[in-house]
Image (tube, rainbow, N blue to C red; front, side):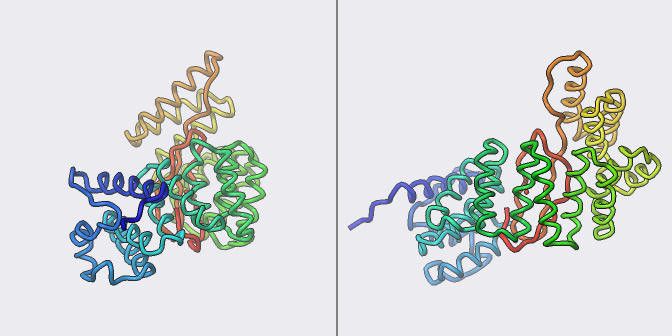
Length: 349
């Protein structure tokens, strides 16, 4: 007798088909359900000649992780899907598939798969973190719920504290974010990113003198980190130390991003002429900032005309040490920061 697929299985199958079509870049027919072997044989043969049926769920997860690290995302999808087939009550396969969706920029689909994993284990930390990351841009209250649930599961996890703080910061809850950045820093006192995150939060609160030593400690730990160099330059500019700021700008690999952020700080502080000069300098240094800087110049014009305006478009770059790497969601209120969180929790920001 043929087993009927439940809603969760049909959802996973549909998302799997979408992923495979998107990753393949062609109109090939993709088998569904348990009939993945024909496609898998082609995709995984460079990585592993063994039959998928001979591998355990744990082995399939390891093979999927390896395929992902090598950039073979189609093979990773197939390994994880087969693992989900062999271990339908475990949250790991759905979580891995969701992380690939998030990597591909399909946050809504990722959210559905993370939720499927959480139905299997409501306390599974990687799925809670992933669901928070998937919803942070478009549904911040929901993201905060996920991160708070993650904190209840792991109250002394620096990555959980950092993710929660980032989301609180995006929600303009700067003192609450500061408290969690400080907790993360106490757990990871030698983490350059943790110092940088706290320093930038203090910059956002206009506590420039307090921010500078935090950023300097981050720089001591990671002297070549371009985001920390940018933030140090910003801090120095905001403290009137223009010569030192220019030295940091010179050392930074992303001066255009630094000038864009500087313009945003000037704009938020009402120094509109300085903001315009910084945005135009960003465009001169790197054409890829043209659209973003033009948007900020439009906001600047609205401010000069005393018209309502959105918050400035500050660059987002989230970098984590360890774990899988997924691009951060675009954010209207983000900042350049170097997020060097511990990699104990698989990543996904």
